[in-house]
Each structure stands twice: as structure tokens, then as C-alpha cells.
Length: 279
Image (cartoon, rainbow, N blue to C red; front, side, top):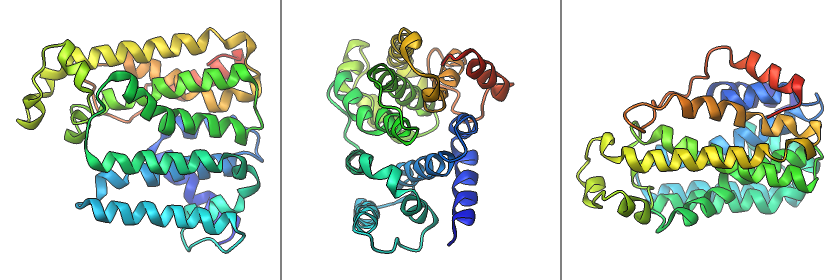
């Protein structure tokens, strides 16, 4: 598959599945957009595995397929006949420094097949460092940004996005409830059996509110670094702008609305933030 079709495929997939990242990528330099779309498409492919397989073994096979694909690309062998794998190969010069992060993301998503909640909120956030924050940090590298302040902001923005995604999904994806840490449930007197007994999502509202508050705190931490972050980092960080709006739209006393649709005028909001050099 030639570069144009792979770009079209990946851009379309990101537009449909991660519209905030799609919009933010449009502000990136033209020569970086194919790699960014390839990165976000790769993230979608490994993230969806948990949802589309009925048996853990099927998921393990898919994750190993992606490990093998990255190994082949790194070795200079032809990529598998998959548009996302081919997009990674086409941009491998940019991706190669981030190879360890791509592998770590696969490993972290594979652990989600176990459907075992982290014991603590810090353990949950450590998982999100490998998935959501790793994605933002890799996007920075694709933009040739390696400033310490930008990396620190990316870590915080990634944690905010990861927590907000979990909050959003709690009332529409039963398995996301299974990922709420035990110490979080304990602090809010939510019995572990509430998860197993398919209790109403409203039961988890206090725990979800705490995670939403942590997401907001991570956004605040990132924004304290604004003056030190170069403007060329903004396409990687701008999705955090929409997380803020998403968190303000929570319902059910803290459970999320579940919609992946962007807030009204999302493109104009991102344009305004980009023009002001903010995120």
C-alpha cells in the first residue's frame, strides 16, 4: 500500500475514533502529520483488543502480532499487509527512538486482558503512564520536541486524558468498572461485590468524581508549565483542552456521559488555544 492510501486510512480512523487528536494533528507541520496519524491509529488498534476478543488467548495472539510487526519493521523487513503497520514502517525514522514506548504500550494493554483492577490509584496512574502518557510523549518526539518542560507537561496531559477516558466509559463499558482501584472503592465505601453484581453505575459516582478531580489536577499541573513549553509541542498537548470540557459535562453525580463526540465548536476552541499558544 502506497503512502497516500495508508495516510488516508489512518487519518480516517483517527477522525472517527479519536476526533480530538485528529483535530489537534491538523495543527502539526505537514511533514509530521502522517506519523502522528499512524501513531494514533496504532493506539486505537491495541486499545480495542480488550473490547473485541471473547477469550484472552485471542487477545494475546493479537498483541504478539503487533510485537512481531514492530520487530519486522525495526529489522528492515516488509511490514505486514495492514495499513497501520505499513504507516509505522513508512514513518519508522521518526518512530524508531520511541520503539520502547510502543512496546510498553502493547504490554500495558495486554495486562488489561486480565481484567484485574490496580490495587491503588497510583498503580492505576502508573498504568496510564505506559498507555496515555506514553502516547503523548511519543507524539512529542514525532514533532521533534524533547524539552524537559514539554515532556513534563505531556506526562500530566496524558494522565488527565487517561483518567478522563476511564471516567467517561464507566457507565457505558462494564469492564471499565472492573478497572477501578480497590483503594478508591474502599475510600468511598463501595463494596467490591458492587462490581460483580452489576450495580448501577451511579453507585460508583463518588469514586468517579475523585478520578475526575485527579484528572483536573493533572491538567492544572500541565498548564503551570505553559510558559516554558515550545509552541511546536502544542499539537501533541492540545487534546487536553477538550478533556477539560469533557470533565465539565459529567452526569449521574460523577459518572460520565459516555459519548466520544466533541463539545460544540471544538475546532474553534482548539484553533483559539493554538493561536494563543496555550493547551
